[in-house]
Image 1 (cartoon, rainbow, N blue to C red):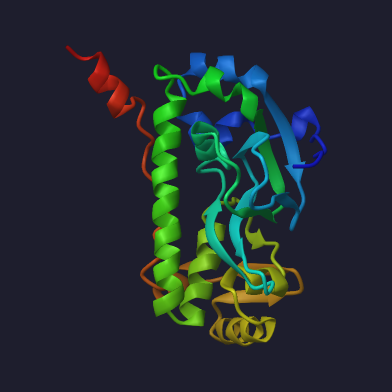
Image 2 (cartoon, rainbow, N blue to C red):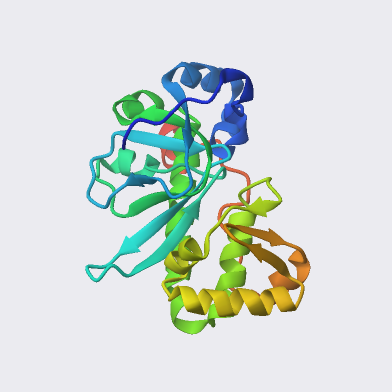
Length: 251
């Protein structure tokens, strides 16, 4: 992953804006904070290619990333989203693996970066961060599996509603800065198909779609039009103890 510009300290969101970091006790977060570097990512920026060695772990604050599958033909589809609810590369750091997917910055934003070589210092059995990351990894696998089902069984419009809402849940901004080309890559369809689907949603008053931006005008109806895959993981509190380490410590 290349060099990323730092945001000015006064404008950078606090680490607690990331839910994984917010789940940590204050003392543990204070020990972790000196190891974190604030970075700003641009829309569409490539963060990793499949097979890249893991150099950093990212904890998004306002950044929204997409895990992408890329075929030899150039065809793409999004497998999962990771925003302020999780981390990118944390599971791979625990497993000592390379990145299995392409990762791109879907929406521009800020993140906290941890060097992967620091992982042994922060993912200890006694640390709160370990069960939180394991929980997030399980939820990420669930999201990828649900996406596979969704791509096979639901209509383009249903999938479009689902992805727009899933992205919106991960940002506090009223506008999603997405291009039609990005949406087409997420859905794995032609750009013309995205144009037709967004026009229908606009005509029904659910969204406003302009060049490079989407405004959600009627979230309730958009949720009703989305497929059953809409629930996004994890939106429940992170555990503070690892069941395995807890069981090992009990007599």
